[in-house]
Image (cartoon, rainbow, N blue to C red; front, side, top):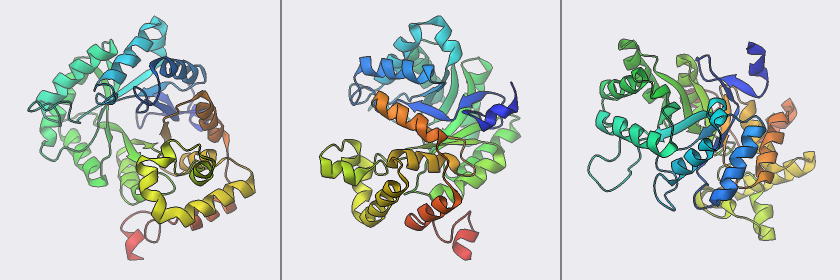
Length: 335
């Protein structure tokens, strides 16, 4: 396939040769906020619209039971043998799965055992992207790569990724992988949006230096950037009235008000503006979206086509300033 695709809805998965959609279907809202039948339909619709990555985690579904979402995705994949070939399947390891000793973290023992359990729940023989859900400061990198290399060699994992890493964690992981002559990390998932831009400082530069694709999770900060104030006033807020959005709103109300006025003035939906901004950022390969309805999925796909002009981007920077003086560390705080 031509690299021209990288200017369209697909990009390379980091420095690998695999193509992945810029929008990933995140499943964190399944199994509790989205009924199973609706989740099945959303996965169908996402795949039909060109989204080829389904991103989950072993802990997802905790509102029902941990692992429930992987089971749900497994049932969806089993509907068609061809579907598995069309999907880049991503899951995660590292969160505590039970109160049992060693049933969490990134020990070699847990990584291998957790992967086997994820494969059974997903009803597949391999996952395309196996991501460390968080840093485990107790686990040496040699131990982590020993387990990951074992899974890759066995054909149970194609690529390894990270999530919620600091820039120096990415560097440490890649340097250790290089010493072992391993491919290392291919991607990083990080929290990144207009309201939370810390990744600009070190995560994005580190990922770029080591050839990782970066996919932003919570690109609308849990609904904060999807028209939260308008929805609260109308009594239609769901995610924007809870979680991360609720925590950040009191201190950012004036900025969110200005943001919603800006979106109204340019005649665009706040959710689509917020996602379009993330997709426009240097160093960002794509975003993980978590739609609960077909309408939200359609909105995300429209955002992929929305182009913000230089003046509009500058106004958004004024509403939601970058960390420090902007750009990467250390210049962001020394100039």
